[in-house]
Length: 529
Image (cartoon, rainbow, N blue to C red; front, top):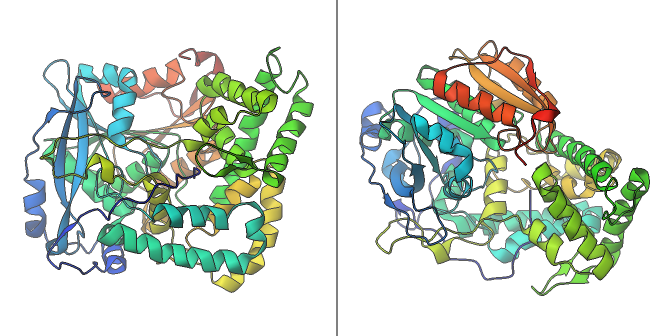
């Protein structure tokens, strides 16, 4: 989800060690070749698969003391590994006894730091350390792994061009997005042409080998489920125990994804307001229908009269929609969202909703001799810049300007009908890839009918980001390998909120024990809050 950005100047372009200094690699060719399976020979890639990783303490005061950090080297372009390399940041918790191997985690986004996700989610994953080293990573283009950036000004321009009334002039919006695409390429350097899930799946395979595992044991959340499915399609004989929680779509274009997200967030908002109005402290009173109308009025009021903030920008209704969306991701955050909305409505204090709207990641400090990107060089816009870059690299649709212009009015009506609160906010998803190279069609065309060991797919009924139907559709697409667990709860993903889901995933990863496909976890199992 895109957040309002800071006005801090962008960091310098991340370094990529290249055999051709000053020249960007031809990324479109690399993606097409990789998508078609025409990679370099095994001999060309042996040096990456045969490397050793050195683990040491993570030099950061706010990270757990038992978290270890390391890095690996991967090719910039797997089809042409001589063109340069990237360094990827990894982190792990050691197994409590002699490990049987590793389990790799991806926390989604795309654009989220796996190092930070593992650090801050420590308590959720300690059970897995009974048998495994638990490992996560910053994917290429993210965090300390050659982070992409559009520059704070350009990223802000992209958000403003697609924000609210600006979309009423589609041609001007598309003109600005084309300019933004140029800025993104200039700020990000060669890695931008080699970002995307197909490349990260190959990085995962290098990690598997370097960690000493014959098979990949994997737990992916949200976007991480897309990554897991792509890995399974590319390397079916190397799939170990794979669990996918909050299953992403593999087929829907970005316009349909945005519409599904708007519907899901609207449903989650209504569930939140039903809960809120049962409390005397609810700022909207005790009538759920009236509360829904008040939220719509509040968003429209802030769009018409934005509130100045201490950070030099005005907080708009679309910023509020983003903040509410962040607060709906888990039921655990509902009390925080309620307090933030009460602050805004009763005192005009935006600090609570601003904190929710930020939704960003803090950079990870490091040792001076570490080859990864320095803390101060992780751009503040890395999260939204990486989200746009990966989603566009994974999406083959590039409608022409004329078609987009014709479609936007119709789509705007559909989005606002889906959600009067989140519709306009999500409409931006339709056009954000305009001006960028066409993405790979590998995911839509090749990730299906897998011949792998059984995989566990978890879908949550009240998920505001990845609707439950995507779990069913993806399971049908993947074929007989997919085993579905129906989580009848609220929030985005189930592992962190449902004791039942947590236990079922751990039992599968630790012992290979799978539930019957179609079995469920009840809402009453959400007792970890």
